[in-house]
Image (cartoon, rainbow, N blue to C red):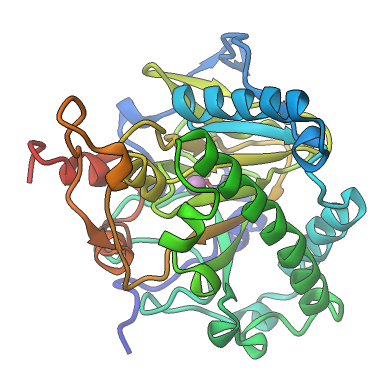
Length: 359
Ligand code: OGA
Ligand code: NI
């Protein structure tokens, strides 16, 4: 089995050891470091899209259309929005956060039983890429497969806390329903059949996985990142952000903008496969996570991806003489090799897929 290039260090253990300075391997180059102004994050106070999804589930056609337009604008210009009245139980969201916080607070040796390897990523991990000497992020994570059911292996999910498996199953189920609703809305907005994206992703064989991020306290947040800049490689991501601290930043027109989560919202992010399939009508959002010196945090990112051996290419309905195909098609298996080798690197992968982009 392929293993990690260096001994894995748990960032949480480093943090809890009380070191006053972060090790060199976590220090980002100057251009990648976050900008802190007067001790707080630079926030340009732009209007971050918030979409109330209530009317997507109702049957008033005018309000339905209004919601669709809001989703459309957000997906075209930002590649992301904060969703409220999204249908996922707030109480379940709280339980999901809590159960994972409890998991990360278990003794190290309990968590180590789930230590992951770069072959599948499944389990407890602390890095993404496999390049020796890479600069690492200030976070640990737990990654698991949720869909299709044939890839779901509950024995690889934490046995403790005792409600973990049940909560993950319940949370996944509700978020998957929301995903289906959103994919229909996006397909309709793009002028495709309602089921288009879902079917192109493999229908019942669509893949879903959960990445739970743990962001330990960091003694020097100005030198590193909780998670480096990237766009999510798959279809869409539904993120339950950390509750206490605004850590997530999205890139808009070159600027990093801090997302202050609306209480009980879920963050919807367009991934690269939808940018490809929409022939770049939708944009995937580049994002990163800032480290924090005062508080640790937990977020749950649920990724919905195409079945990994299907070729994803621009929908024929969205390709014309005036708007030729921007991308080559490729399978998600081929696509994600890059991130799995090199770890997060902005939107470089997607750029390289352009017909006339750098190969
Ligand atoms: C991710 C991600 C953001 C966050 O897991 O891909 O971007 O706020 N997470 O944890
Ligand atoms: Ni992400």
